[in-house]
Image (cartoon, rainbow, N blue to C red; front, side, top):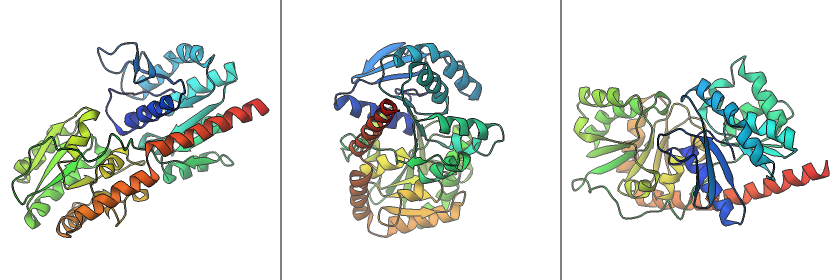
Length: 368
């Protein structure tokens, strides 16, 4: 595997890759991950639950830094590829090392197109031919949502891109004893597990809170950090809801089941989204989900597990949240949400499909 970020980095993509790798190891496969030295103090090499992790240099968290990391990691990745059966690029920066190693070592490679970074760049005159070359070079292309798959196929006519929703480790993400103190009697708690970047739309959730608390006794816990935090805290104060919105900051991934289990409803006010692993994790913890109607969110959220609202529209968000909180069906919706994840988006099913893909590309290369 090649991916820019890997735990202890926190995020949906990081969670997806870790649990996929762990699941592959549990099936008896050897998995090695090349990632970046993105946080200070991390070892250059370690084994995490059977997954060998190798970290290489990355100068900055931006496009230039990701590109530098991709090229700096090529010698290490190519050496590992010498004994590999299949290579897998889990983000844009992972594709060049996989392409080079695949060509030099004659090893098949798979790509997965995950995030809004791809969607943003897909319209660029610079990136379109680059992505087309990447897509055409891979033995198999995956996408985290139907939207991403359709965009990718439009860039490379004749190339099939399989939409495969990211999975959740349902043995880890399940309802457990809450770790936050309970809210006052009769008060509902919303949870917003979002990093505080513009694309995640948390501003519109904060703007919706005055209307929500006017209609119903509610509070919110925002789990995540980012450059918007100070501005969002200031906005909550200006709108008179500072005492009803708690910004917890970033929390370790292992803490999330306990934090989610103390809430009544999860809210995802995204402006752009692939298929949200965080939303699936909430659903696995028996939380109904209210989400904006963008990207891959409508593929996992419907009236059986929650509700959709219009993006960047605080009034629409508030109406959806209030209707769910007043509807008297939160427990029913939460149970249905977990069933849906177990049936369609469990990590076991994800691992099964990846193993089948890997076996197929290996066989096709051998037959060529």
